[in-house]
Length: 239
Image (cartoon, rainbow, N blue to C red):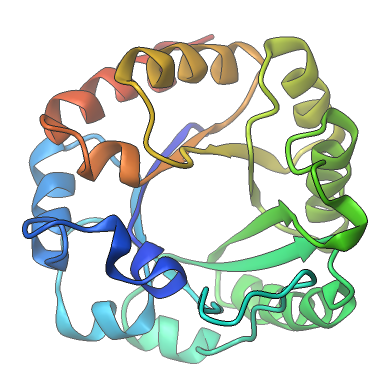
């Protein structure tokens, strides 16, 4: 099943540096998602889910860390429970594992318990599988490292993995193959030229991905609804 997720968890991870006077307001991003009418879900943290309502399917992010304490081997602790996600009406949950960090075992252990509980409650489980840490420095988009991260997601029981794009169809095809029956979502990443983003989206889908999770590239765009529809056409009409 194809997926196109609107991501808005950057405020926790990056602080307000990604925002302007408009998109700093969560309601503005929810409005973009609802007006576009093309997203299969919206992603944010517990606090926003408690205070803002949406008609979009909710993917609740259960862990996070700030950028205020730079760490060559990051750890993103669990901050919210599956039970709370259920109470907030979430369709699914997300959790980041920094593959290659010295703390990856702790994150995998936390994720495994989350995955078991979420699946018992018929919730979709998405693993953010991000290569990050001293042992993978400068290899964050390496074909073999990203493929390893995607494979870990399969082995851990994730329904979908969210990973960085490796830069070309051939290498990302290997990432998708490595994930087996776990679907692969490419992250939108940092803000880039719209034409580059659309070209990447086309390549990502050619590689056999299940879709994308995009945030900054949409809600920092001058026409976020229009761009959402362009990306949707690529994602949902690909073979």
